[in-house]
Length: 238
Image (cartoon, rainbow, N blue to C red; front, side, top):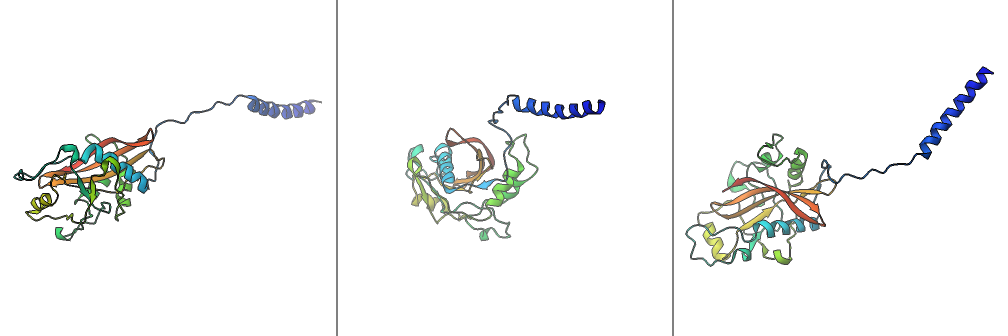
């Protein structure tokens, strides 16, 4: 009789546990709106790249830059109306070369690969961009990609094949004689996008004179249906 009660109890208890779990109401958990970035990152699509370039050009580069000193005789245009030149392909990170003359015009400035992808990223003066994200940007841009140019209000961007990496002494004088009122030229890598599609990273170089230019790393966030610049970090200036 005693063994029969023990056996019956052993059969009833699991059934009660199952009934409790099935009958208990389940609580839904809301997905967090933000959190750690997901990797690996992917290369931005042409549509994403075009949208990001439009945001950057309209907000930061179109109309920026002045003529070199001593070129005041060249015609000028209102700040927001200055056109800007760019290349038909994206900026890429090239291995260091012994002679500057051998550098391809599509190559980023010397030292930028090491600066961007360095694991020793000083977050005291720079935005806290994960090393995996920065390394992905460099790895994705070791070769050039077609550069989709934005239209609409950013249609002042013109593709050009005449942008060299090394300049003769009279380069900028000839440049502004040929492109009066220009804001110089602009080159950008293809952006990389985090695995969840929420953030993107892109490197841009802008030059408008011998002592007029900069190299900037831009972190963008996709919200409300469009890309917005979240933070920018200047890597060099001239």
